[in-house]
Amino acid sequence: MKLWKNGYFHTMEDPQKTYHLMATDHGLIIGFDDEIKDLEFDRVIDLNKAHVYPGFVDAHLHLLGYGQKLLHHNLSHLKEKDEILSELKKIFKNEKLFAEGYRECGITKDDLNQISTTHPILLRHNDYHSLTVNDKVLELSQITHDTGVLTEEVAQHAIDSFPKYKQKEVEKILTLSLKSLYKYGITGGHSDDLYYFNGFDETVAVFENVLDKFPFRAHLLMHHMTIEDFKKSGRTYLDQTYYLQLGAVKMFYDGTVSSKTALMKKPYKNSNDFGQNVNGKEKFIELVKQARNYHLPIAVHVIGDQGLDEVIEIIKTYPPKMYHHDRLIHTPWIKKETIDELKKLRVSLDIQPQFLSSDLPWALDFFSETPELVFPWKTLLEAGLNLAGSSDAPVEIPNPLLGIHAAVFRESSHDGKAYFTEESLSRFEAISMYTIGANYSTEHKNRGYLKVGYVSDLSIFKHDLLSMHPNKFKEDIVEMTVIDERIVYDKNKL
Image (cartoon, rainbow, N blue to C red; front, side, top):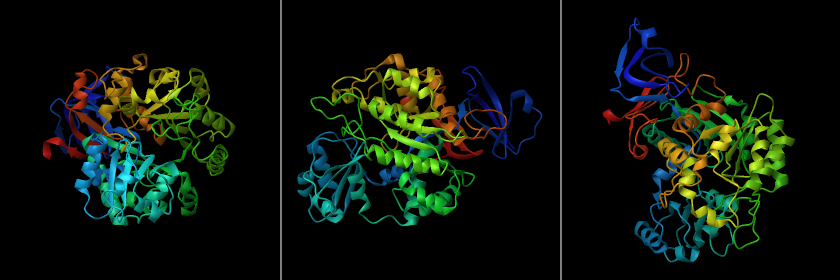
C-alpha cells in the first residue's frame, strides 16, 4: 500500500475539488485525506507540492510510427528546398535513406536523383499521407510516376515494397516510443499500427511482449485491411491483456488539406477540385457493412466538411450496435447544420488541438471559401459531444501540454496570432479531453478521474495546469508518470 503525500490531487470532477493525500493499493486508488489517516503504508512518496491529474491519454496516435520517427532522420525543422537538399546530401551514406517530417516545398524525384539513382530515397511528408521518392524507389515498387510525389494508397504501396522489420526490431521501436511518451506524462494511447508493420498477429504479439515489461494502456484500432486476420485469430473486441485492448475498425474516408484530398463542400482555391473519397464511396460502405457484420464499431479518418456529412449519412444508414459507439478522427472543418446531425449519432470525436497551431493560417489559403466552423471545439462540447484529445504522433509531438495550450489559446505556431477564439476551451475542459474524454472509447468505467476504485494512473506536474502562466505549457514540467501505481518516469531520478 502506498501513500502519496504533499501534493495537489485534481480529481477532474470539478476544477475546485482537490486533495493533499492519496492512498493506492494493487493498482487502485483507495482513499484521500482524512479517510486514510489511520492506514499503515509500505511506501510513502513525497510529491513536493506537485500537481497530480488522472493519467493523460493520447486518443489517436501511431505508437510504432512515432518510435520509427525517433529512429529516422527528421526534417521537420527545415522549410526551404535548398536547405533540405543540402541536409539530405550530408546524411546520405550510400545506402537506403528514409527521412521523416518533410514539409512540401517543391522537391521532386529529379532533385532526389541528383543525390542517388542507385539507392532508395524516401521523404515522408509531415502529414503522413504523402511521400516523395527517387526513381530507384519507383523502380523497386513498380510505380510509374512523373514527379515522385506520391499520395495516399500509392505512397503506402511504395513503403510496403521494402522488407519489413524483424519482430525484435519492432519491439525495440515500441519500447523507444513508450519511454518517450512517459516523459510527456502519457499513461495510455489509442494507436493505429496493426497494418503498417508486420501484420496483425505479429504486431499484436509485439505489443503483448513489450507491455509486459513497460506498462502502458494501449488501445489498438484495427485497420480495415486486418479485419479478416482479427476474425481468424479468435480474439475478441476490447480486452486482450491487462494493458492491451483491440478497438474499432480504422478506415479512411478522405485525405488531407495539404494534398488537396480532404473532401470539401467548396472547391479548393483557383480550381474545380473538391478533394476525394480515397477508397470510393461504395467501397467505403462495404467496409462499414463488414465491420457491422462482425459487430464492431468504426473509427473514420475524415477531414473535409463534405466528407464528414457523407460519413454521417452512412453511419445513420448502418449504425453501430446499441452497446457500441463510433469514432470520427480529425473533423476540423464543419458546417453549422452538421452539429445537429452529429448529436443524433453515438460517436466520439478524436481531435488534435495541435493541428490548429500547425495548420492556421496557411491551411485557409487552400480554400476558395473559409468553412463555416473552424476547429469548433467549444461548439461541439456545448452540443454534448465527447471530445478526445490526441496528437496524431508522429505528425505532431505527443505532448498533451501543447494540445491543451492550443485548445485554450488557439495560437498559430507560424505567426503567434489567435484564431477563432470563440471556440476556445477552458483549461479544465481542455484537460478533460486527455483524461475523461480520451478514456470514453475504452469502455472502462474506472479511468479518467481521481476517485476511489479508479486506476492509479497519474500524470504529475510541477505546476498547476489550471492556473500557471501560459508559457509554462511549453516547458518541461512533468515530474512523474505513474501507471498502475508503478512509477515509470521520475524526472528527479534520471
